[in-house]
Every structure is written in C-alpha cells, then in structure tokens.
Image (cartoon, rainbow, N blue to C red):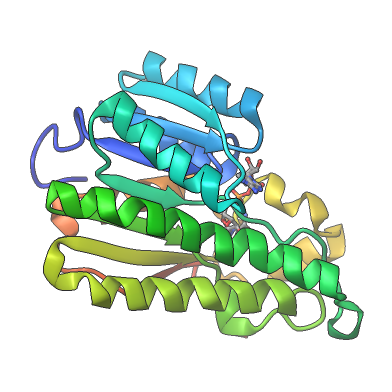
Length: 254
Ligand SMILES: NC(=O)c1ccc[n+]([C@@H]2O[C@H](COP(=O)([O-])OP(=O)(O)OC[C@H]3O[C@@H](n4cnc5c(N)ncnc54)[C@H](O)[C@@H]3O)[C@@H](O)[C@H]2O)c1
C-alpha cells in the first residue's frame, strides 16, 4: 500500500496484457485505488471488458487494441493514454507468453523470433514510448514482468522463453540505472508459476512438476502479483529501482 492515502487517485497507468491474468488483476486493483487505467491488449474485447470493470471499481478505464510487437502501436498507445488522461505516471508491461513449449534442439527460428518479438521487443518499444512522457512529468514508474525462468534457464521446455525473460530483467536493470537520477524507477518482477491462461500451453505433467518444486505447494494468483505492482509503483517503495523481485512461494531454485 502507498504511504500517502489516495496516492493513486487520478494518476494514470498503462497496462499491456490487460485482458487476462496478471495485467487484468493489476488493472482492477489500480481501479480500486481510483487510478486511470489504460487497458491495452491484442484481445480488444477482453481489454474493453476490463476497462469497464475498472470504471465500476472506482477508477477510470479506457481500452485499446494494441500489438506490443509493433513500435507504431506502442507509441500510439502512449500518445492516446496521455491525450485521454493528461499524463502517464506508471507502466506495467505484462503482455507476454511462452507461445509453445519445446526442448532446446527443436526450437526453430520462427519460435525464437516470435518469443523475442513479444517478450523483449514488446517491452523495449513500450518503455521507449513511456519514458519521454514520464520525463516530461518529472518521473514515473515502470514495472516489467520477467520470470523465475530467467534464473533457471527453462531446461527441457522453455530455453527460448527463459532467455527472453533474461533480456527483460537485464533491460529493466539498465533502464532503472540510466534514469535513476531523473525520477524514473524501472524494475521487474520474476514470478514463479501463476495460475492464469498463460499455462494453456503447459502440459499437466509440466504443471505438476512446477507445483512439486514450490514449498507452499501451489501456484500463485495474479492478484498476488497485482498487489506487488501497486506497492512497487507507490511512494512506499521509493528506494527500489533496477532490481527484480522474485515471487515464488519459496521455490524455484531446484
Ligand atoms: N503465469 C505464469 O506462470 C507466469 C510466470 C512468470 C511470468 N509470467 C509472465 O507474466 C506476464 C503475464 O502473463 P499472464 O500469466 O497474465 O498470461 P495471460 O496469458 O493470462 O495474459 C497475457 C495477455 O497478453 C496479451 N498479449 C499477448 N500477445 C500480445 C501482444 N502482441 N500485444 C498485446 N497483448 C498481447 C494476451 O492477449 C493476454 O491477454 C507475461 O509476460 C508472462 O510471460 C507469467
């Protein structure tokens, strides 16, 4: 929670991947706090529904169909958020996916490129679009969703995805350090398995092996990540930047 009551009221967050999972729950949590939430997703209908729920929750929600792998769309998203709400204070880059599981030798160029386009370029473009807006406001906070996979390497099923998330964690560190003296904090969260549609591409066997390695014995919930995003964006978290925060029920190191 923020140190200052009503800290988020009237402030603006852009959320990518807002139609589902972590992006969706974070959008609703910021709505609860009275924020303006710009809900961006490839899934337009889903984004529209979440924007409506944000407004019902006490915030102001607006949606837009955005493909974060397009530089033009990432910049248009940011321009429209500023036009609609006057400023951009926070950015959550949650759009991402493992796309397909594959052992290392069967990762082809198409899977590698699509994985990096979505998870790495998507975050890169959205940050390049958001930072000039934030500099104009005198600061802002960017939270990118990495993954525990970057620490483990994804052996057997997800080296492509783990490598892409390693790039997200490293980019967040570099941007956090580059803008630390200009009021912008930039961090990543590296979750372990979270119970969302992300796992539609994971077999039951893979999910069970992930669960077995978590001392708490369960997947996390997207709400648990959303509350962390809220804290990281708040004035109660003013000295944190560049780092990644691991959230995994005590597991993930095996
Ligand atoms: N769920 C997990 O176990 C887990 C663990 C670690 C990290 N993550 C990361 O968390 C983030 C959110 O995942 P989630 O679990 O909420 O998944 P999710 O599948 O529930 O949500 C992802 C959202 O991203 C959107 N999206 C996909 N491609 C897009 C594009 N090109 N442009 C715009 N939007 C696009 C989807 O439509 C979807 O609404 C992702 O970056 C994922 O890699 C998830």
